[in-house]
Image (cartoon, rainbow, N blue to C red; front, side, top):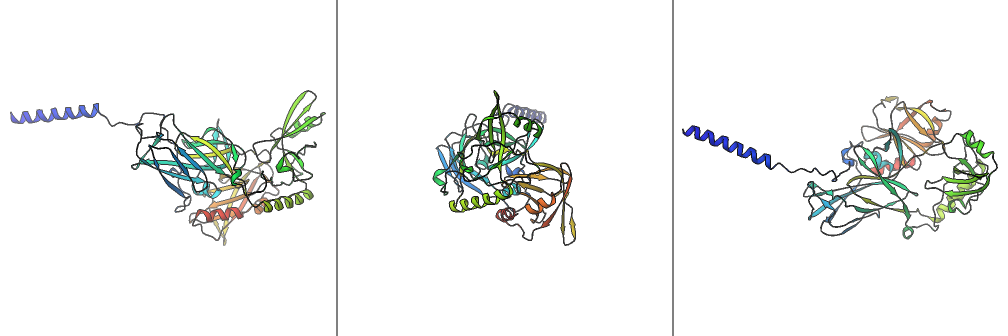
Length: 435
């Protein structure tokens, strides 16, 4: 009888506890509005032991906070912005981590993918700077409350307007436009505009627009003489030539958001037309223009900084980007080889990067993959080796490799191993800047 009573008591206790656990499950966040984007830490580091500087800031969740970063950027956070994983307001001290990614070396070291996929089409990004923000409270991740956001004023050296993206689901997600404002109070230049670096014309490939354009009212062009204009749009050259055969009147030149690109507006009869064009210089004028550019740059002794204000509604990795347009680029199939003291390296599984424009377009490549390049821009190749060393190809050797390359032809790029081992991100940055 006693045994039956004990067994009955055990079963009663089991069902009671089971009912308790069923009626009081562990509370989990089911609110889709509590979003958290991907972070750099989720990527595999390409160069173990080398990282980009992260700064920790203490934020009081019950007060308005303003953070001034080392590079001059600002973060403004109002009280009541953060919640925990269950959507409950946080009223304690929060530890906020902030990292800026500004250079090609930062992007490579952190393994950041600069591809943007949209409508099943893959694009390359030209970056205007990135930052990553994460936060924890009592060692647990925090989130931005639904309907809340905080403001980031990011200081950048990149001119023009960029779109704003967050990194989520292993892809960049468009968040809106971001306009840049010159930081006049921080400008060390005597000019109130940024000089446009001259580009030499390519007679074999450029379509020169023979229209007299009034450009002296455009500051960055006003210092130059005898500017030529090449077509920089995506229309077929034959279509543009036919259009230019017509009687043209009232030509007008306007700046665009992209550096070195301008819109030529004109009429043919009663029809209004627009062409995207870029300034170039003939061989003789190019030398004079470069001398003028270098003289003015030295005289003004400084760079122009721009401020981009954006609101952030989720934590993670953020990017100021624009799609890299390259209508004049030549597509080839690239193969890579590394030879050191007669030894050939297997490049098939090495991280290899094509760096172009102002070192702000970084495209990861594999053998036999299509590579786009412009002869008018600097083109650099860098491969990351397992022992934190790199193999490199400078811009001059790149041009020599593609000298006779035709569209869709296969080109072999031979890289040389750098003597310097990479110990810091600055080491890699110096190597890239000298290529």
